[in-house]
Image (tube, rainbow, N blue to C red; front, side, top):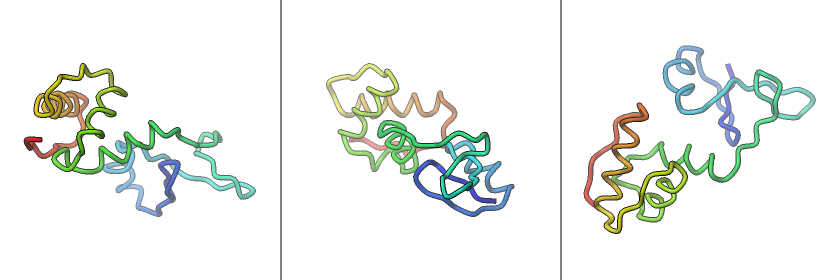
Length: 108
């Protein structure tokens, strides 16, 4: 089956889609008259914030820059402490609470 995150299109097995890609925000992809659409018929054009969240969550938190940590916190409504170590800990706690995949713990 073909899937998309609004930016990229991949061909994967249904099992891979259900167990991995679906929770990462991918949806089934259908192409009609040259215009990409999701299975429900709507065009999928995510905004910059959505793309940022999808892409940054794919890498370990230890590799996030301070700017990425701040932007993620702003978008998720996480209070932003003055110190980068506390910010990283707050973001990591949010990821775990949201049921995201395990992120590497690291000091900023």
